Length: 321
Ligand SMILES: *[C@@H]1O[C@H](CO)[C@@H](O)[C@H](O)[C@H]1NC(C)=O
Ligand SMILES: *[C@@H]1O[C@H](CO)[C@@H](O)[C@H](O)[C@H]1NC(C)=O
Ligand SMILES: *[C@@H]1O[C@H](CO)[C@@H](O)[C@H](O)[C@H]1NC(C)=O
Ligand SMILES: *[C@@H]1O[C@H](CO)[C@@H](O)[C@H](O)[C@H]1NC(C)=O
Ligand SMILES: *[C@@H]1O[C@H](CO)[C@@H](O)[C@H](O)[C@H]1NC(C)=O
Ligand SMILES: *[C@@H]1O[C@H](CO)[C@@H](O)[C@H](O)[C@H]1NC(C)=O
Image (cartoon, rainbow, N blue to C red):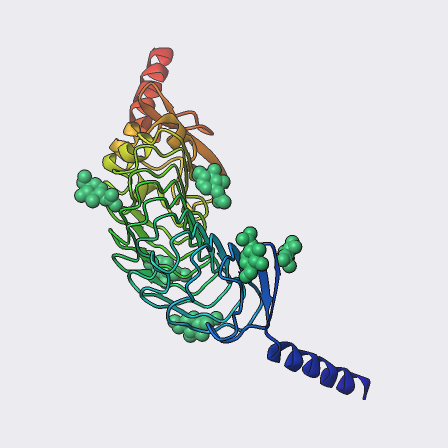
């Protein structure tokens, strides 16, 4: 009986909350709630600089209302599943610097949805339902510095999906479903790339060829195996990254007593030491000693095991004689 009544009360509160669209503004910052229709439900002064449309019921819209002074827009926790071409334009939104449309259900971003916004610096589309980035999705954004696409379902980044963004420093693609990193997938100025918690099994030669300023590359919690990583070209690419590369929590699938590929020795000591091979039930990192790869548990290069056995045999023979 009580459970039944309180259910009715919650419904009434929800229903009345949805019918009342209201914007509360102080100076030029406005918080709006209960918005479902854009542009009809948004009534804010033309000089609004910060607009927060949180936890409302906003579905898809064509172009966002023109606000010539708008600098920061937040549309977190709504029901948006599609960003239309020219949703945001330099003529309607010339001052836009920061856009956050996280926690919606976006599965489609039309090319040129965000194109050519002259001052856009930060864009977050985290926690949506985006599956792929088509060529031209993010392009001609001269001031873009931070782009977050974490917690989506992106399975590939096509070359030129993120293009002509000369100041892009930080790209967050963590917690997606990317399986493979294609050559030259990333624009050249990047300082920080987060690819953790994806499904990466393969890194193509030249994947990080363009990103010569990288300070942090996170490849942790993927599906990398030693055999996929350790071709000379991938090793060289990863080893030539000037900053830190995080390879933790990958299922390396190597055995200390196995034979390591020749090309392993072209990896840097830091990359090598993050590869964990199994040895008698536990895991041990590889080490690079004088150009030779060793598994630290055995302290013996599996590659040279036959040679070692020969020399032990020779020693024994000498002793017995
Ligand atoms: C808007 O909301 C934020 C956080 O929820 C709050 O700090 C700020 O004071 C609000 N501004 C207005 C104008 O209501
Ligand atoms: C913004 O516009 C409102 C009227 O729409 C005005 O009262 C207010 O003074 C303006 N604020 C600034 C900072 O210009
Ligand atoms: C995400 O997209 C899939 C189809 O691609 C759809 O079935 C699913 O309902 C979507 N999820 C949300 C939360 O909209
Ligand atoms: C933007 O990227 C820079 C450089 O990687 C980083 O230091 C900063 O914390 C990022 N800002 C935000 C808001 O994510
Ligand atoms: C991960 O990649 C493999 C093949 O590369 C594929 O079979 C599998 O479905 C992927 N898993 C997810 C969760 O995307
Ligand atoms: C990466 O470099 C190649 C060759 O120099 C170039 O053709 C390509 O456009 C670059 N890619 C990006 C995303 O900057």
